[in-house]
Image (cartoon, rainbow, N blue to C red; front, side, top):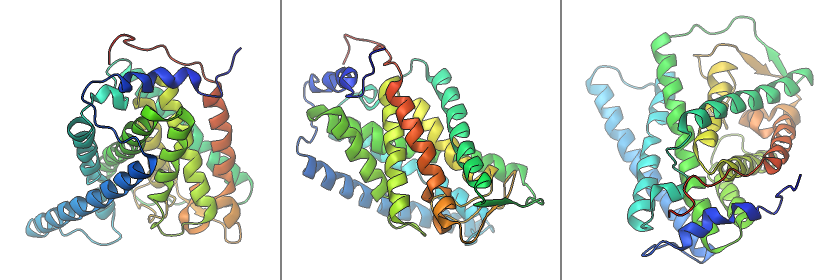
Length: 311
């Protein structure tokens, strides 16, 4: 089998963007990074404004959002819909290109999404097993009580959150960078920017940053191989949901949810394996799984174009 480690077979994905008349995509990588930084600031400002409105509405309704509560987590997850909206505006109005060039494909949406859920759950489950067998995790017998309504809403919130980051970093930044540069350049740039977006999270470390970059690479490769965002979007959502609301662990430095199926506790002194305050994403267990998955995704066959003559 002829493996495409150079990602040459993915070049038509970016080539079709180059042929769009009237497109306004930034060629210079430094300017693209600055645009991404500006976008991230704008996203933060609009999200904070939306959070104020949501908080005021909740207070008026007699249900103020409490700090550290699952209601706060739920509000934060739902507010990532702001990122989805702003990315859509940037791709369509600023860059003037169709959403399908941002990997938003209608074809195979359901099978890709379902496979992404399975892959993501298996990936993070493997991280948990490695950390558990290595002594980095302990399972607590009594799990916190579940609130069916809150739990369902949290699951929906993770679906939005996972897609929002894939749409922004892979659907927009990766495809924009790849329009005038090599596929690997686009993959690496979008992955490093994805990791950099988490620099303000609690417990961030050098290894956590490396793992986030590896995660971004895995998601980018999966999107390019599938020619669609849906598999990686589902993988991202279920990866985060599994951490917070299945295994009861911190998600990228965020506090552990009280609505969780199982409840694991990190073992003191095993931070290299379990990631410490940042959570399992900051440990060697995640590094092992992510490196293996990157190799697997690199060896995946390239999906044929859905519409070869259409840009």
